[in-house]
Length: 528
Image (tube, rainbow, N blue to C red; front, side):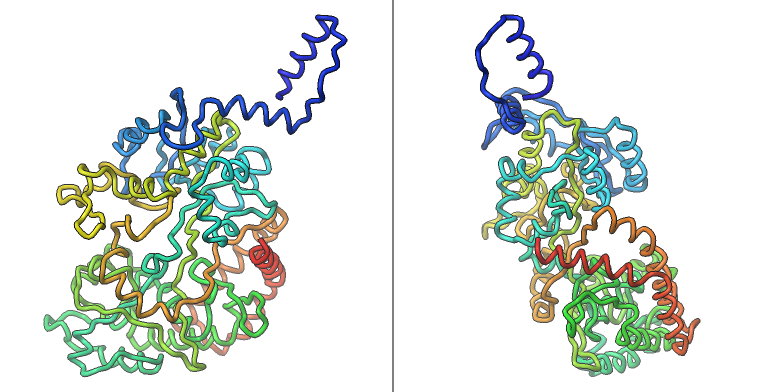
């Protein structure tokens, strides 16, 4: 019972001079009664979601590949007809998303929900505890059967989106934990070049080095073009691919600097580990000998794609060369066995790609209906609708039971749907996703590297307010210094004889505080 109703009830009793003893109305009973009154317009299951139409205002982050105005997208027009819920979309470009989202929140004039808004975990906790975002634990339990089912099937998902205070403030972007091809970034090698060189698939880092050397300077394309033996869009992709050969990076792709030390079973700071130094020395050797593109620190995406389409890469870290570079003569490159026998594929994502994809605010008068609205996109029918559209209009069911876009719809995804660009609150499932990761060659290829997958790809950790304050104090300086030093070691601007000074500097910058926070977050992650 809200405060206004309590005073109204008391006033009526006094006015009547009643001596009737009223039953006690606890806070919990009052809230339950208020919820019951709000629930009367909400159907517990099936469609429509609400009996009488309602309107919700959503703030939405928009990627350049997505439709410019979701108010005009047929997907949500169809969904409005199904649900009786009209959504008015406020579109915000990803270029200014963080700034605009924060300004909107601090202004106090915020919408009913933030959709595809990439809200950082620290902001979810901050604004959740301040009352801007509402806790969703009970609402998910009552009105989100699809997400609840995923929690039960994959407990790590619930662990990963629960804040340190035990509350859930958001719906996430998920990758189905059994969709291996989308969970793993991959490296590829040009098999026709290996044939021309009479070479076998390399098994160790030493063999890989020798193979790359044999590619350098050869006109393997037959067109006189420059050969780049090992390529990637950025140096971090090469490091992430190679670090598993030194037993590093067993926490997965979202944790660049910390993983689990197999000796102590405690979080380890990778960039000060002696094996990290050895791995950098290997990358330095590839770079200084011209086996990696010397422009890797400055090349942009357009230039990288153009090089790939010319067939200049002997081996490359990318989603699928057949799609990204229109090159067919590639096969997957398994992780190499390193000097200590390590052979891990660490380019693996957590199934939680983004924690803060959808959050409901305290301005929302219809939280139950809103939870039902978004939860639909975590069940098979909703996922199919979100990624495929409408049967007979955008896709057709195939004789083998699979689904495929209609020919006239291919290349026009964003005219009907909104998933291009990512960051959406839903789950990517192999049977409904039409990206490169769902192509047969990608599905079949990933089976060859699955035996080398790390056991547990951590999601982004969530920190308490105090821990966030500590990380704001030390993490930026430490991580910036690590990346700057990494580039200098790889390019030879800094000698490896300076390694001890580098480690000493990191310690001076507050590494003990950084790791204390990480260890606490890891313990919560284990025990959630």
